[in-house]
Length: 117
Length: 115
Image (cartoon, rainbow over all chains, first blue to last red; front, side):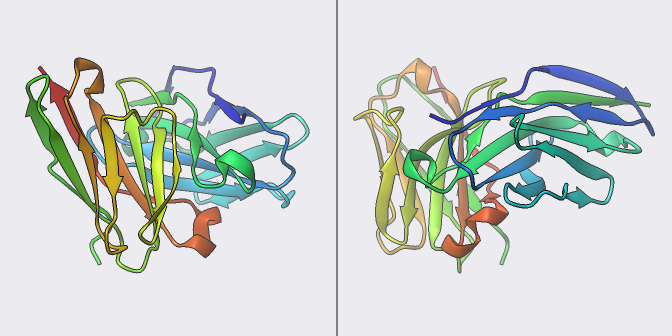
């Protein structure tokens, strides 16, 4: 079964600095999708960035970028120039194409990020 | 389109009572998902529909839980004989079948408290 592990329950960063959130996953599939979602306090979950496993190029969305290491099954999120509005829970998620995971996203336990002024 | 809507936002119920939540997905999305999120945890998959067909159910979905999507539009999630362990945020999400690689759109959730 696929699993997603986020080993950092909490992190903090000073405003304008850079922070990296870690995520590892386990799967036997060769083609799949990886996501980072942001969940601000008491607000809905929104998609930050996505990566297709068959693409070697790391995805980038403005201040957010990923370091996707397929062989190591690692998918970290880098936030540059951190802003106070980045304060949130961040969830790494996996979606496969086959078997039991076909219909759903599998989430890690999340990393609580606090951006300090 | 205002996104995925969930109602109610909050529900407090006494143990043993039945509760029902509603989710209205993005209108053109044919897939609808239910997740449960407890405090400090990531969302856990419960079930999903493609149109009106319920295609997958998690082992987390006990016999007390039932979900429907009768006309392939909105969905309801009912919990019978609620227990304190059912207290959680219930999240609904939707997507297009051909666009699942682009992630799901989530609603704001229904927070259930069983007292």
